[in-house]
Image 1 (spheres, one colour):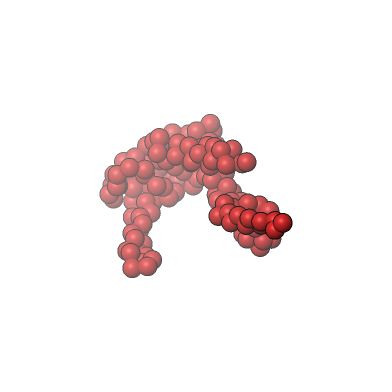
Image 2: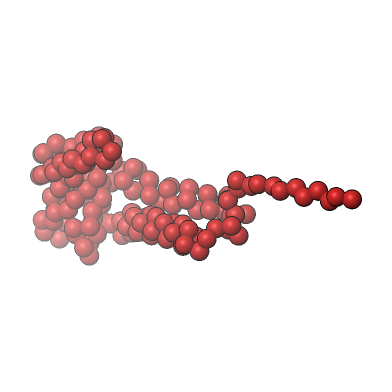
Amino acid sequence: MNPQVTLQSSNEFSLKNASGWSLALIFLALGLAGSILVFKTAKAAYLVVCGQPAQAICYRIETNSSSHRGHQRKSRQYFVEYQTANGAIARGRIVPGFGKLSIGSKIDVLYSPHFPSLVEAHNPVSLGIYPFLTLVVIGFLFLFRR
């Protein structure tokens, strides 16, 4: 009698088959992405709870161009000036969410009374997208935790 040996190949990823270095890189990437999301979420949550509303005026716009693999990408930084509750003039940098600002445009912001240069545009995109992304990441971690 000749016993038959059947070899099965599996293309599935398994923690048992991963080398130590690849596993370390995966966890490092997840940790870095998670840290960025937690920081952004914490900033938005802090401003929603403790932030003071103000109306800011855009006084400067910086446009940066970069190229990656032949694709041009432009990013804009909007610098705003606003009056704090105690009458001081503060300046900060924001991402307005949808749309573009022009110099002299007014936008509603939330700023930190303790660190007035910590400011975000007061709209759902600027204040809500990071908590949503954090929940999506946590959801995927639970979904694929097998």
